[in-house]
Length: 124
Image (cartoon, rainbow, N blue to C red):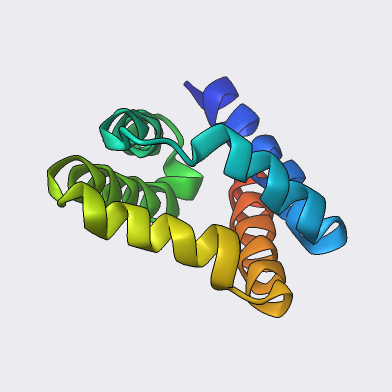
């Protein structure tokens, strides 16, 4: 399970780096990937990450609280995406992909990068 946490942390570092360095290209890539009519299937992504982080927290004692909190937040996000009206989720996605400024996306990328780095550093 620790290996999966390593993979998640490296993935977050890569995604965060792309958002910071290549903001518009990364936004366009994720817009093509996630902007769809039926958004309920997107709930699987944070739900899977949440379950993996919560379970992984019990296998890696050094990163227990960070992984547990991030896992619970991911689970809550997945539950919200699944149960919220599609219009609310589409409005949120529209804001992220069309109306959010580049500085905002870079800040999100920096936060993702820092969280991935924190998990990776605690695991080492």
